[in-house]
Amino acid sequence: MENKEKKTKDSSPMKSLLVLYSYHHHNTEKIAKIIAKVLDAEIKTPQQIKPEELLEYDLLGFGSGIYSAKHHESLLELADELPQVTGREAFLFSTSGMTGDAKAAKDHATLKKKLELKGYILIDEFQCKGFNTNSFLKLFGGMNKGRPNAHDLKNAEDFIKSIKRTQGS
Ligand SMILES: Cc1cc2nc3c(=O)[nH]c(=O)nc-3n(C[C@H](O)[C@H](O)[C@H](O)COP(=O)(O)O)c2cc1C
Image (cartoon, rainbow, N blue to C red; front, top):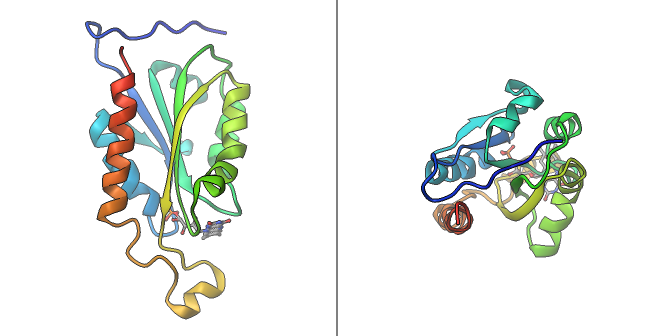
């Protein structure tokens, strides 16, 4: 167990990390890059991370495409290996073939539960459509061509700016 002191406006800058796995069309990577720019955050894959290392960060974002209605297996495995924390904040993001508030909540539920079990407070979540050529879809040119688009990226930027405003206050 460990304690977290919340950053104040006068303290050192908030240190953020995005844990990202994006392989299908690098859709989620596009979202991660916008988020990383706003937060001045590093981006690492689960494979590049030692679980204890995450304690160095004030804010964590976990993101991937949605594969079989969940975040990527490597994020789920990392969550299982994380040390127990108290009151640390994290957010989730993803891109997927189908979207909607209920769909996002369902897609994110597995990772959310694992992180909550480790003591993380999930402060917000973001999902948008991503180009999908999985399975038979490739025969028809795929679905969601061009997504994430400029509008999705703007929504991602607004999402993370709103989180940033709540940090350090
Ligand atoms: C193996 C596989 C399984 C997928 N399963 C789902 C799914 O269950 N639900 C969904 O909405 N989209 C699904 N998709 C679509 C992806 O979530 C979508 O294309 C996403 O943007 C991929 O992200 P990435 O390019 O960052 O890997 C699947 C794609 C692949 C390749």
